[in-house]
Amino acid sequence: MGDVTGFMKYDRKDFEKEPVEQRLKHWKEFIKEMPEETLKTQGARCMDCGIPFCQSGCPIGNIIPDWNDFVFRGMWEDAHKRLSKTNNFPEFTGRVCPAPCETACVLGINHPPVTIKNIEVSIVEKAYQEGWVKPNPPKVRTGKTVAVIGSGPSGLACADQLNKKGHMVTVFEKSDILGGLLARGIPDFKLDKAVIERRLKIMEKEGVKFKTKTHVGVDLSAKELQTKYDALALCGGAEQPRDLPVEGRDLRGVYFAMEFLTQQNAINRGKKIEKEERISAEGKRVIVLGGGDTGSDCVGTANRQGAVSIKQFELLPRPPKERAPNNPWPQWSFIERTSTSHEEGVERDYCIMTKKFSGEQGELKKLHGIRLEFGTPDARTGQRPMKEIPGSEFSVDVDLVLLAMGFLGPVRNGMLQELGTELDGRGNVKTDKNKMTSVPGVFSAGDMARGQSLVVWAIHEGRAAADGVHRYLMPPAILEK
Ligand SMILES: Cc1cc2nc3c(=O)[nH]c(=O)nc-3n(C[C@H](O)[C@H](O)[C@H](O)COP(=O)(O)OP(=O)(O)OC[C@H]3O[C@@H](n4cnc5c(N)ncnc54)[C@H](O)[C@@H]3O)c2cc1C
Ligand code: SF4
Image (cartoon, helix red, strand yellow):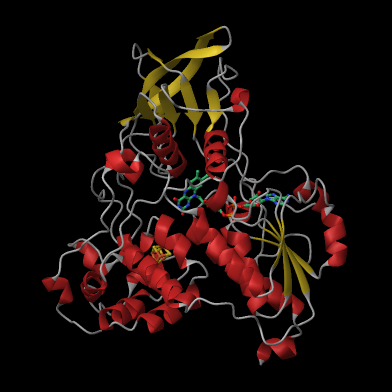
């Protein structure tokens, strides 16, 4: 802890962003790097609070105060070494994590918290620039083989950890590209796909094998994989979107958010889309249903495509601007957040339920909704009863509706059905404390086991599953060494 009074001397500074009108003209990232001197003073704001709540706020337990201090002292390589101990992919989390660490920062009780996420991404980018991130294959191989199914952040973290322990790992991915939602769902302006490629190349050089266009349970039997590999790790995500089964759902113009987002990401990487399959917001009035990350990504994408207007409707009430008394520090703060996509232009509205869509000749024309009111929370469940406000029915002209209302869990047909893995009460793959499923030797991690979540949780889960697989594969005598 270098500067004990840093938190009193320096104000929080966030990364500068390209102005909205400029960044809307392209699909690239638009955050500007911060000079090293400014980063040092930002690191100096970390106040040696004694109990680093930020570290417990971070799902992977990043040792944040240590690397803040290294950055303050200009010891960037040490900062990178410390960061790499807990995080396989800081270049992903440093870009897209909602930073629960910052809502747990002690300075955040009565001041703007330390810019932990920005420091994290600056450390790893400096490490790449300096050549400190390089292939480091394991010196000894165990002779054990593991198949990881799914190449999202959980599958990649699991593969990376297992490979480091000396096991031979093959990652099977049904898509033509690797990275899961990092590559296909999250827009390029939040996460440049070259950032994923850069990491994948290192993993390949370290010995991880990747097989794309291989749908396990469909074009490759999961049972066959069981016979060929010593263990399996299922990291297939939570790919079942929540639908809106109301009248008019099948009109042309109503799509799942993921249909829209994956198509734009595919176009950005050079894929040709037939005109009749193209889902574009250009010149259209757009309504996004759902207020989360996916909805916000639809807003940013629709603005870049040239939508004439964008509304985002949320079923739940508008969150407060500041923490409510029942949501104290260091908990994750349930407040209204304005993403960079929101800054680019959207009209947000809350307490709205969509009742139906109507159209002409199969083409969407209107959304019909009603306003809702919420009662006081139930003392036991905390849930607020919801009721429609009589006479508040309305309809609005719209050309494109994007359904971004979350995901219902993993796809059950195919791989899961074939293996017979048990599901938990929420329909996710049930695992024990070692992340092993009900089928011996078959493990699961990420959104597939946890339900729809965050990249940082997927990395945490992937690492935990790798630990479980390692314990399962290695004799106790070796584990004790
Ligand atoms: C649009 C969108 C934006 C998001 N933005 C953010 C954000 O900004 N920050 C954040 O922290 N989180 C964000 N999230 C959530 C985050 O992306 C996920 O929680 C995370 O990617 C889950 O990782 P995963 O590895 O478990 O699954 P996924 O990333 O879903 O990867 C699963 C992979 O498994 C493959 N697969 C599935 N079944 C099979 C099979 N049978 N055979 C072969 N391959 C298979 C899939 O093709 C996929 O590539 C966002 C999610 C979405 C949808
Ligand atoms: S991974 Fe997320 S929670 Fe953890 S230190 Fe980075 S930004 Fe914070």
